[in-house]
Length: 597
Image (tube, helix red, strand yellow):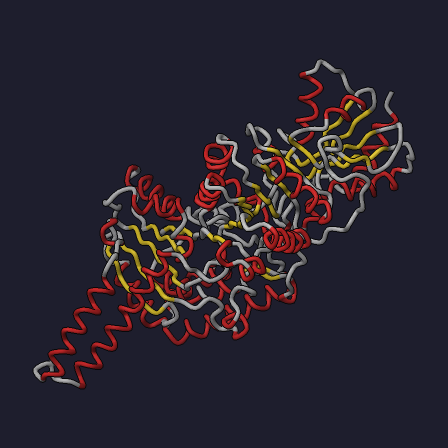
């Protein structure tokens, strides 16, 4: 295994290995898609860590897995079939390898997890070092900062490696990054200082003025520097691609037991010219580096630009995901009305609550999986005060290759329990616009969920209104399929055809909260199948069953949704197939249910 060989490699061999690892990463991502730029930028850091430390005895914790591809290759895993069914995950996972100390799909958790490892180690009388590798954008996350600031005293044998590339997915403009930039400037200052000392004698008049200027610059560069006040010995910044420097520094740090923060400056996309020049585009790509079709994201961006042109109160808020949620054009056209909170979803939601209280009309755009991190703020800061904040929830349902850390299956179950919050699921992009306008007109908190990928236009019969909360898409007096969400509605229409039963009726249940009780009362004597791409437990089907139970109505119904498991990486279609949520699966369920007495 390479992890063992690296111990005896010299610098020349490590450099050759770095080149080979980059070639393998680029080839694997070209074949299967994946996260490229950030992984390319962390190669030398990972090699130097394996040279200096003893993994898996020592614990290496990544913050987000976007840095970990080299780590996977070094520890004997092939990237062939990366993020596909049967291949390796795109993120560290202890279930995959003993070298993966902690799961890493969302950012901000590494420092707190590292402190937890240290506490367990010390209380159990064990002896190993804990190393966390965190990006500069992830360090600004609330959980990371809580762990950094919780105590001025940090445990021994604890090292935080700060991978500073100046980027989240897009450019990092946080105040923390600007503080880190001063440290990077300090490194340049030291080199410049050495050069000046060689050229000018400090006893000359110019030399004395120069000395005073240098002291002033040094003081400015050190201003607001807080790591050492938080219990870390700060080391750096170092060149994150200079293996000689990295190996030398990390080898020395491995010999001491003080808590250390090592600041390494890297280039996102290093070693691939296209990725270096456009790291955002190559952050996450599909097969052959293609950009995925994000129908709903694109439609939302255009919708918000159109509405913002007519309404000066509309503002858009995201958390380091401007491009992913479709807000890039909005940010360009309305820069003063676009707000990126960094990788801090909770702060983004509470900021939106303040905006709403101040008279603005905020739209918060987040992935479903990241919305979970702001649940308290949605409850306490938005819904408790009944503020008109619209949540546009991208990547709802199966997410495909990103796997179990990123699935969007929880949002219906989590959100429908919150008082004052309306929850919607448009069947296509045209209906997204109708629901968005309808939700804003209510003057109350609302969440609109939709999946990733291509979404066909399914047409429609009735625009959403208080009377037409749901929409009947086909007529019949047999089994009623109450389908919730774009993929569910599309598959339900196809399932009717595949079942061969003309009497099946398909309903677009685009409003989860509130339910269309008028139609539920009408369908009470029929056989009902609820169909959704979300967890069955507490989901849309559960809401329908609860309504009938609360009203003491006996109905014949079947809930069809995802089982209560964490869904591993594969294509979204393969995930639907595995959990029996395709159109063909639904058609068989319709046939079996229709045949019952």
